[in-house]
Image 1 (cartoon, rainbow over the protein chains, first blue to last red):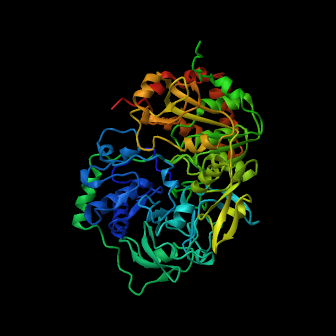
Image 2 (image 1 turned 60 degrees about the vertical axis):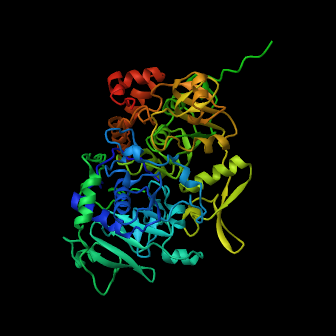
Image 3 (image 1 turned 120 degrees about the vertical axis):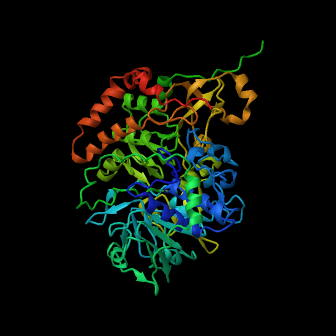
Length: 294
Length: 303
């Protein structure tokens, strides 16, 4: 759980995305969160934190965020509880302080202190059955050729959480592949093969929302500004199509108001990434660039 | 005559004298927070080789720098990254792809379970996570086994030979503390590393405080029984919860140099090592090389 962020942003900042797309993704995730759930995140901590606090405010007052942030103590949002910042008082809204490793210690799903119910997972690669990969990419000889960061917290928590939501700002054929080169978190078929039930429920990207039918990824809705054809072309495997594929509902008035309140006054941009020779090159196929988080 | 209580303070050089080639070395910290960098730089000055690092579980610049300087044979970490500056730590990436460095592939939980087995003195523990993944294929010390009809990973015990931590404060008797201004995530698996360690647990600190202060606020004590070395700014360019923020400018410059390694240009990286480690012959020299003004701009004002 790489919860620490370089600079906490306002409501949420996702590298390379405009505010409207980020806000839409935050709303999509918030709508999926249920009252009483325990939510943990590492990937895109600030965006997921926004979504969780939005859900607390709108429909899930008993939702628990690992690390104890409560929206109803006031809606000034800041990741300040995670950081040194004291320029807003979000850090005063925390019910409990946990060590960074606290979440690694409670794998009993029946415990009120369980890992979590909902976990967000991203990857350098995501495949059609929802397996993810942060380990690396294979070269032509089948051996690891591109070293990834490592599986971070995704493997075990992504296996134990009842509800796994895949999250990927980037929606491209290099990200969405037929079969991942290495498996950090198993998807539907791989889980079934080792006696685990279920699999990831949803996948949210900057272009669309996908769900799963019989363990295969299916297009559920397309964000305004994208088309079904564009999403299909940006996906490196045949995407199942739902019978009816609406435009993803835009933020409602209530969601907009709550988001604006959450955003408070601050909006600090994230760090520009270090110059990577493969980055910014329109022909680049290096899947290690971009923000895949963990 | 009564015997005086043992003073457990030590200096950085003496602390690192306890490390030998080939040892398994635990390093505390999480991403940018609380890495024992003064120790890391001294390990590099000594030219130690073939170390196994147990760091993280999500490791950062402490691990990347030791790898880049050629001190490391194997890394036990769930991830090595520089957050938004480099999603894959650049020296780690370069040397792992070349096969110079082995990765003990795991996730944060498995890392933690291996240390738990070490702390409990059992040869292995069973864990449910990681089944159905590539971890046992890439890490031959992890084995998928069946027990009572369920599948588990068999995770072997890991016991560091020595552990280095960095924290805000300690008293001279080895009580290590977070400071009052520390924010969420004020501790970072220090206990897991310390409890599994076979040898010394050595903590560098921003300041050594009086035992009276520790007694007045025992809830801030993270662990006890450590050896303590004073190293103000000892986590730089990382941050220390409650004391100073990470120096992102410095980390960015480091990452730029390390990213050049993959293009075959090791000049910038060698210059980084020379300027901040070899020419700066000790921790004070390092702080002079970074600059007082730069350091002061990172300090967190007391709330």
